[in-house]
Image (cartoon, rainbow, N blue to C red):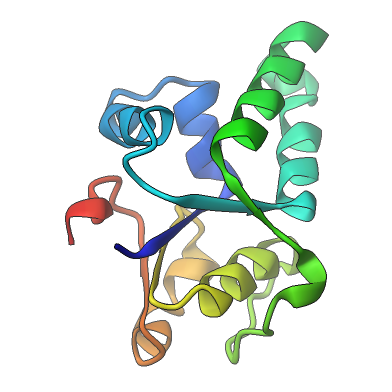
Length: 138
């Protein structure tokens, strides 16, 4: 089984928007059918993003989302991450690439175009970068 890395936009679809396309992925996470990974930095980013007024989430809902993600994800220590040989324009997204690279073979599910543009290069390193929520079946 490949390790799974989910970027913040995917977590928003799962926990905030409850996007129906992400329901099977959410079910797999909640029932521990897959092993998804996080880091302190990615958890903090999730907390920062969902605290923005755009999402209109009260403090309890924000805490619940972060706590749930922390409980079901396997946390990696940032100091133990290998630097991926591909660089993203957005430094906030680089951590997801580094995590996926460290966890090879792995799947990084993202909707970020800069990340997705690295897919062919990442594939050579046994990292599948995709926007498909059903990537778990690949």
